[in-house]
Length: 117
Image 1 (cartoon, rainbow, N blue to C red):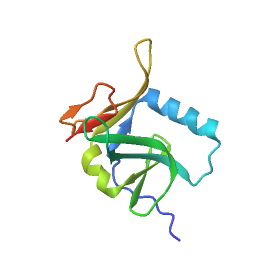
Image 2 (image 1 turned 135 degrees about the vertical axis):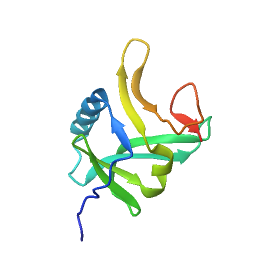
Image 3 (image 1 turned 180 degrees about the vertical axis):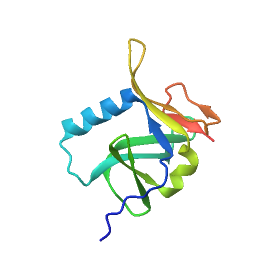
């Protein structure tokens, strides 16, 4: 079984705030070394597609990246929708949570977790 990590440039980036929050969440969940952060899309939401962000094990068809020290899994087909996206974590008075700055999105919903292309 090969454990080689792909050397391609990751299609998404994380802000410092997102990295800190993701590392904190991973530590709180006490996940094994075979878990990584899954970033992707799925059909649904008020604008047509929802973002996926959560810890998971690697699946068939996944690419693996290490982004700012965080092992990240993304299905190969999702790169088309996510290329150039920046994931941030907001912890302010007006908003708290992960935000997605996706240059490929033609429109987004008010909650920021759904988009169309």
